[in-house]
Image 1: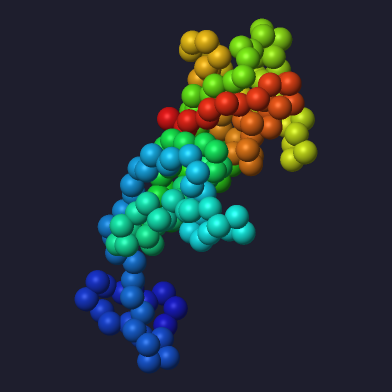
Image 2: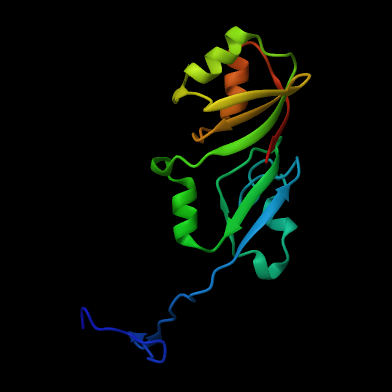
Length: 168
């Protein structure tokens, strides 16, 4: 009956089939994704290996929190916690992600300003929340947006290319 309370010891069935409740415990792991793997549960048309192949069988039920493209490495969370997944990936929560990005060339002050101001990509305006020069052609880039291949496309838009991208 609608509104009935169910305790952990109750047995609930639907059309004769037992309904199993979600465990109060969830699992979340951090994975250092290597270059060459796709953030997917199944291989795509390129037959690239997936991050799931890096996990032991008992963790292959976890879902990736966000994505990293095949050419990128670094931090990837995997979880079975739906609330964490939602709050980490939905744009309204504006979760920041930090990357170490190595470019072909050092960025000029004008280009840095462009990254922070924002630039038009095919799927809307993309911007970096902050950028900090580290050493040589490497920068720390922080953004909360999660557009597909956003950093690489922004670099291309400013006439540069990414040679290495790692989410930290």
